[in-house]
Image 1 (tube, rainbow, N blue to C red):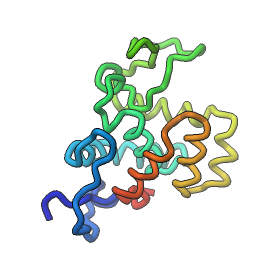
Image 2: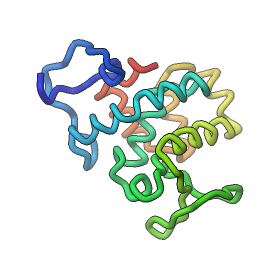
Image 3: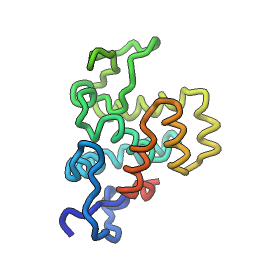
Image 4: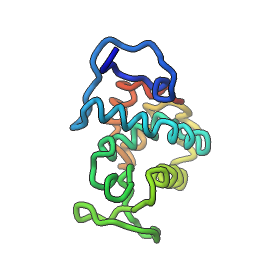
Length: 167
C-alpha cells in the first residue's frame, strides 16, 4: 500500500506484512524523507553490526536521531550523521556548524564507521555490549545517558520502523 510504513526487513529488500496505518512523522522529517534515509543506510548499519556487535537498529536510529534523517547541517556539510564533535584527539578534517567544531568525513560510510569505532572506544562499551546484547531499548537508554543521542527519539524510530528486524 502506497505510503505505508516500511519495516526493517523491507529496508533490506524483504517485504514484511505492511501495516495499514500511515507512516509516523518524527520530528521535522516527513515520512518520505525518513523512509529514504532509513533505506539508504540500512545495509551500512547491518554491516557495522556484523563488524562491531552494535545492533543495526541502534546504529540506524542513532544516525536518524542525530542527523534528523540527514536533514541537519552537520550531515549535509560534513557527512557527520552522528553529530560527533572534533574532540581533543581528532586530527582529521573538521567543520564549524552552529559555532561548534564537528568531525568532517569524505563519505557517509566513513561517518558510520567512525561512530562504531567511537562507541567501541568508550569505557562503558564492553559492559553495555555484554549486558544489552541486541536489546535496542537498553542501548538507546545508555546512549541517551552518555549524551550520544536522544534515547526517546531513537526508541520512537526503532519502533515506528520496526528496525529490530535488522538485528
